Amino acid sequence: QKEVEQNSGPLSVPEGAIASLNCTYSDRVSQSFFWYRQYSGKSPELIMSIYSNGDKEDGRFTAQLNKASQYVSLLIRDSQPSDSATYLCAVESTGNQFYFGTGTSLTVIP
Amino acid sequence: DAGVTQSPTHLIKTRGQQVTLRCSPKSGHDTVSWYQQALGQGPQFIFQYYEEEERQRGNFPDRFSGHQFPNYSSELNVNALLLGDSALYLCASSFGTNTDTQYFGPGTRLTVL
Image 1: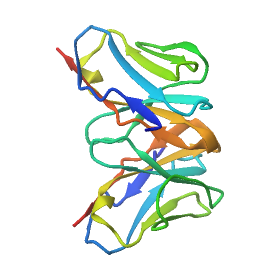
Image 2 (image 1 turned 90 degrees about the horizontal axis):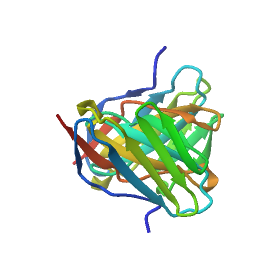
Image 3 (image 1 turned 90 degrees about the vertical axis):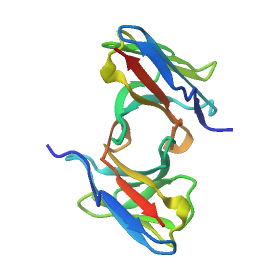
């Protein structure tokens, strides 16, 4: 079983719509959760971090965490073509090890 | 303020050879982590260096080794290269254990023929 699993997509949404990205993790004691964005040919950049159950909002991005269900999600409101990228879910697990999912490819159609 | 830098940008090696990749952390950062990202996959944690010592290690064989220098820069060494070692190697720097501040470098693309 993979440590972090994401729906690989690809996911296509029209401009202005809400994009929903999902991630599950296997280590129940994980405490820190991150979403990274990676443009093609570039390195990952941090979008959001979340540590507590519930929602965390930052501009057009909302991260949601449910530790009981071992589930993390990222919502992107008012999606823009510039949001087209691969989104990586990362979990800091036992022993401060970072595990990344395989990423979800998002395309925002103008 | 310089970000994380890595060298070289691209590298081509043949099976069995050895390679050294280099990373300079972002100014003010003292922790360096290395990741391997195969095509179409997420980054996989190789190891992390802090205070010139390996602090954490992922599930990688001993062929992968590293070093951190007093100026916090770091090297990743891979011996006896295999075709499967072809990947993008990413360096990320952070301050102490604060992973919120983990910034990635542009990566080194290694191709093993």
